[in-house]
Image (tube, rainbow, N blue to C red; front, side, top):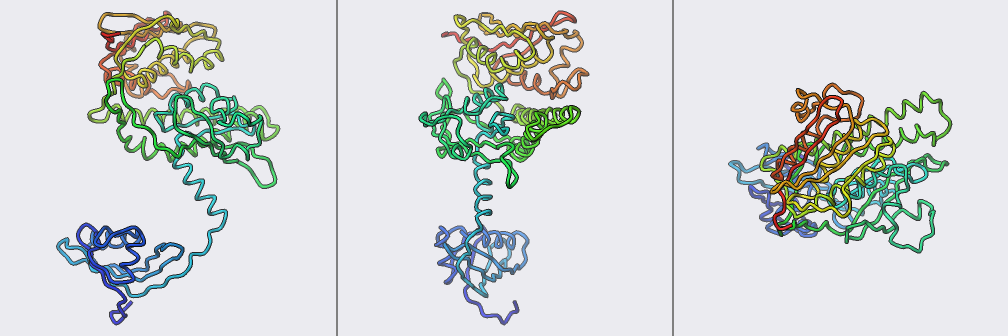
Length: 458
């Protein structure tokens, strides 16, 4: 546009990108987009143009497209900073409004799926028979459900998320399950599932992506002491990288499992083995993402936990139950505390469970087949103690301190560990006012001891 162009409307913004005054039709657009006059510039495209001009300190002119109800407005706008951080002058040189063409059905569906993936609090990969292959969760409320589902890989997802309408007869076609209401144990919110098929035209789905969504906001968590439980932003990995990476990694795992189990057709054993290695590597990457996110949390400034009055016996039995399938697959007998045992403590239930899952999981991983893992309780006065003991190869004295360092795996490779679990577990124990130690000797197994403050009123 040249300097002789007709100016249709003028407007003025301040240093905070608030529209102070505007002529029509810009003033009307500002109000129809939900803004006020004076008020922050409402059309996002116009706001971004003004922000850039003010920030860079020189005049910008370009076409701006804004959604105005059922119409699309295309306007040529010049934005000129006034200097010294005083805001900008806006000049509208052309204005064209036309009905917005209807969106293609495929684009609408793609937008819906993108939105639902963003809002989902739990996702899972399923095979063609709707059996669980992998689970990812970013909700504290659903952490227990996710762990139970992970322990039940290979089973139907409806065993863990039963349909709210019990009148439905199983099995149901997947199209009838898409959008179905389900029940989530321990949650008072209403939930629904979205089933996204992995398929090629003309063929039946070879697998599915399951999304668990709720239209109600998550409730504020309150500790037993009456204080709200807050969860800090997980910064780069937990908030930015993990949500982006988990989806494609879960897809890789699902496809690899489909190949490994020969669901897509006959396959030589060697290729099935390769697919199994790919799936295992993908699961390790997911585990590493979770550990890196936890690492950011425990190393953040001012990290603390939410103290509750809990029963360590109950937490230990729950951890053993979650890992029971993994232990049975290796022929290992878990010996949790008896239901009649109790040991009151002051600690955060979720964090104690996290530590015990790591300790018991390690004991299963490094113990020989057909051995036992014991989970015992001790009342040590002002301390409440949980001991996880195994019949593994044991740990030399010079290695016992090193094993709690970051990324320390004591020379082991190919066993699926990330080298962060014990470091994170010790940091969590210390944040709860406790400790995590080990007693061991070569050939005599290992005893990991978690101490937390005892509940004096228990």
